[in-house]
Length: 428
Image 1 (spheres, rainbow, N blue to C red):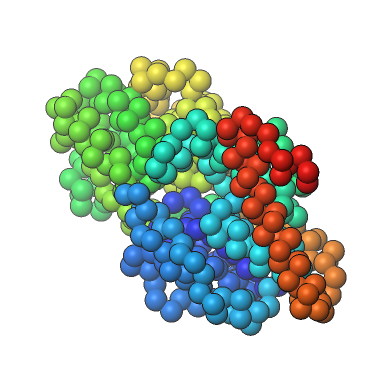
Image 2: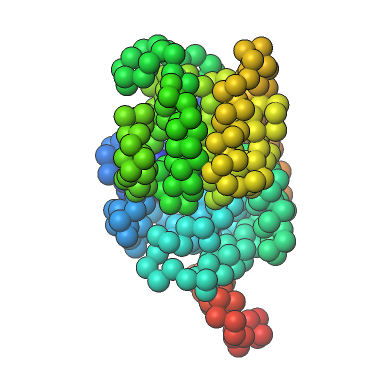
């Protein structure tokens, strides 16, 4: 099968969507499928990567680490035709997401959309953030999903949320999944020595983009409360992003800067080593649609202490593989860390076994099985011959209909944001 994946983020960008696309792409190719990834340019990206089309983009949009695509280059359609896709899989409802609709509609291909993100929690990256803009993004994502043939939700929580918001198309729960073998072994001693962490320190760890939507200032305050009562404890953070300075400032103001380690972005064995250098994994985000970093931590045998939120409650099982906290205060989070630290060794080992079992339940192999089964079902329902034999007039009219639907989505989303009613919706 030839699978065209269209995404606004891809390697070397660090983030859940980029990692999801990379993981599924590698797994599909391992199984003998061809995958073409259409993505923006990013700094330090791999040049001439196989079956990757890069679109010119504005880098570091609005001081973030995101790239925003420029108008498409004219050879794109020809390159896609040469690839001859069987299915188009869009990862976003805007920017290149619109391109995915055009590519699929013109070729009469099935279109899949993964609703990776609660987009309203990322509007702070856009100038003019407001409640109206949040309503706009919710409506736009919902209407985009209804343009597609199949929607993937990364978790049951997100499936329920987007169904309640009005997604009418079939929804399949397909988490990204984890490759347990990648995190099964790590050199704890080597990593601790390299980062000046004592062998006997109790290390609270975190992995992810260091960004405001990850609730990292709350997490830092909670960990600081725990560290204040445990002189042998440290906080190890793996990742990079705009919230790094805020974390450092909080630790400096508390007089505990010497017990914070920020290791930056790590990959492959270095990442596994870092996870094995931790004792528990701490997580406070409300913006997740799936617990990808949680399952990676669990694959390294780490119990997880986390706030109850979408994408988290499917993974963390209270007192089985960690703690799932409904009392969202720094005090209660610190108390949960204290609970884990004070467990008898045999009880702590039970938590670790629970974490490892959960990681295997969320394997990438299982997720790829589900995704490919959906692709195959959609392709089997598609008439033979991807590009229909249409007259130039019919082809032009089909293109106009596609543009009209995309324009109408934006107009009606704007209508919902402003609380007005537009003629365009009443007449369609």
